[in-house]
Length: 369
Image 1 (cartoon, one colour):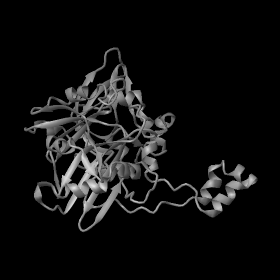
Image 2: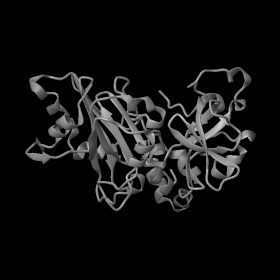
Image 3: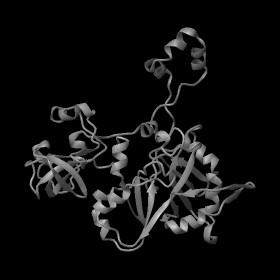
Image 4: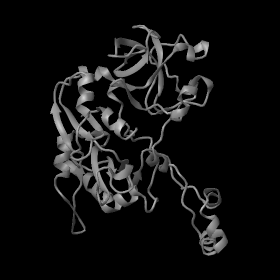
């Protein structure tokens, strides 16, 4: 299911900003943002448009042209602002009486911003074949190959199948859109959110093994980070071992994690090689809790007389009671366990089948995300 980037919500609160005469702070769901003073009243319905949204190039959004129509986390008068609030008049008349939560993304023509790493998830294959090798040896065509329009004539699209429908994708909901979860009791595991590329590896009876990025199968994508990590960590062999846990043959095993390292999201952690950190282990559709998962991966796997060690994402804390949204956002700011000299991207909280993320505003401001 595609993420809802614009939806009808209610203004929860409004408060003044010190030293600001024309703007004020608003709260919508769990999001803090800046709005024009007097444009909204508490209780008003409005269209909340989330960060990561790219607005269409239309007259009503021309004020965003200098920002390439992309909504990012910004700071105004020392106030963090995440998102833009539009009056309902931005919608066609027939949609203005819709209920809270109504998805306006497609109606407004809004698209999700994709990072360079995410764009590579669906880009075309580099030129290949005997014709391209001939062209690269020819002086004139070698010179032309510097231009993208020329190279594109020889590109081939990767043959990739869709992400398996029986596996839940790894994109966690943001706490600010899921504030009711804070009323949930029980043990939560709070882990560091790593800034990398998502990977899903699975083994399903009788002998189906697969490697996926966030959206596609990558089994035959030789040379990609997904393929190399699967090879480095012997994931097919390890998943085979995991099917035998607890003296029972599993019908399917799914391992999900984050790949970090060179050429991934700027390699913020300063790593010299690709590393895999696991955050989900799912056995026959049941997600294993963090402590049990860590116990499994704390012991190196013996594969063809080689010891293979896989790490779990760093655990920050275990908590039974979660604080307010504001406190959780503040908690998301901090230093990375992988490299204490850099900021962490945020946190992920998990309990059974419940999970959500909080992305650090400081991280988003620093890296212009």
